[in-house]
Amino acid sequence: MDIENDRKSLLISALKKCGAVKFGDFTLASGKKSKYYIDIKKASTDPATLAVIAEQAAFLISNEDVDMVGGVALGGVPLATAVSLSSDLPLLIVRKEEKGYGTGGRFIGDLRKGSHVILIEDVTTSGGSVKDAIAAIRGAGGYVDVVITVVDREEGAQQGLATLGVKLVPLVGVSDLI
Image 1 (spheres, rainbow, N blue to C red):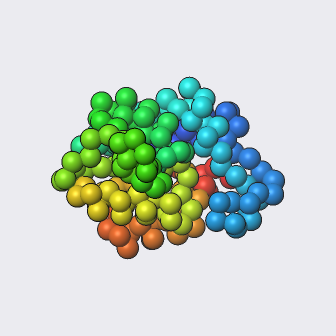
Image 2: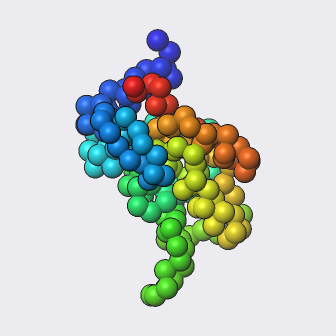
């Protein structure tokens, strides 16, 4: 077995062990029905599984030209935080909408014009939720060329993000899990 397969097997085992892979009748955020659910919140609250995710994403990032690790509130934040700690890269949190009080703003972190950001996603289906974050970062003068997702449901996110010039890199695909 090669190193990539070893990494994938380790993550699959960790996701199943922590109870992140569930079977039954579920309604997804999109409204679509599914016979399985990938509960990455379960994985991101389990230290052992979170460490595996962070290490694997940080390994992938080490081959990229990147200034920051970003996560979309709420699901991507613990993942991006762990990856930030593992990669020693600054963290960028992307709010779903601009805050209208305090210091305001859409971002927590020091996003500068020209910053290259890799976004960390929990689960991708169509890629819709991360597209808005990409647009916000680009609108602020940053660059996003890569999104790392823990699990790709393999339902069009890769193709949808490619139309924006963004490469989706899944740690595992749903076909690996079920």
